[in-house]
Image (tube, one colour):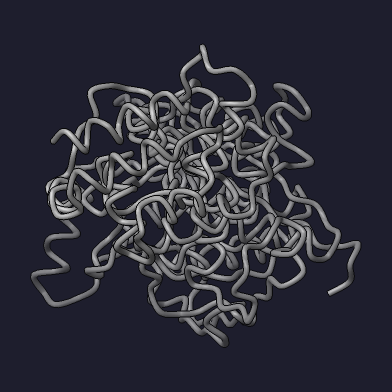
Length: 466
């Protein structure tokens, strides 16, 4: 594929929040375009007026931008126009409806939802796959007029040609074949005049010069229909790739019971967008680079040949791993900016900086810092049971000696060690327990540098009196 010709798109329907499966689809399309220096489009498919909500368009855009996915055409780039909002592209579709009708490749259908449901039940009862029975396929002009006189409003169906073999090469699943005789005539325009997914999704891809479409493999069965439609209209189809579904560890579709299921929930929980993207990048896509990657690095290593057919399993543990990798790479300025909303406002700059240096290795989510704020700055100190045991076993003499050795800020660890006569775990564990109420936590050097010297002495004296 040439580097200047790749155009991909993400085309969500604004009927709900952006869930992780769709976010991954958007990421893959974004990376494919970026790898080939192409264009990535954001198209909003809002023709289903009953389910689409305008407010969700802004929410979708916010989520994608938070993930770092920008687009060349779409909301906030071209403004409100028919270039990206499908509900405003109706006039573009009319000539294609007319072309199909004039060529006898589309016909009005007056069947009610009840009639279609009864026909479907009868086919299933007879052991046949359910598809449109062709009830209105051969209606004469007078029969159509009679139905419309009775007030029946027709849908428009595409007349599927008989005896055709539809073949295409899927970017993920390889060679695919389908027979047109297994596909029933399908609706391309609803009773209210709006376009259905089969029609406008395919037409828009062709009109917007989209060359590659990565989408969920639940759409794999739709592709033969859309290829037939584009063939009838002499429009160029994109190359399709159908990526595996995203599931929980139990193999069931991803939902709230598996943890956060939407991008908004992850953002509000304090996850970093780079951590989320690194996880999504590896769900259903293999890469030899196991380091934390930025957008450009992901684009360079993204390859449709590495997209996997099997379902990809979302695991909160893996997300936490990538979050910790992101935290580990934060510099001092970015760490302070990230944690600022959780820190006491009265801290001076020096105390704030030393506190962050001390606790950052023990923080994964921004909210984790709340525990250490309490530990460092709140009294009385709350002890875990293991810490109480460690303090009791160390004995009062240990803590009195340590308190007496605290002469400067920050206290010198070697001076404390010499004063107590302890070393190794016998020194570090009770000292940490007395100062933090925990037996695990920040390294003692940074901890002592971050904690006010008066509080260090007070806590050591308190441990000696316990």
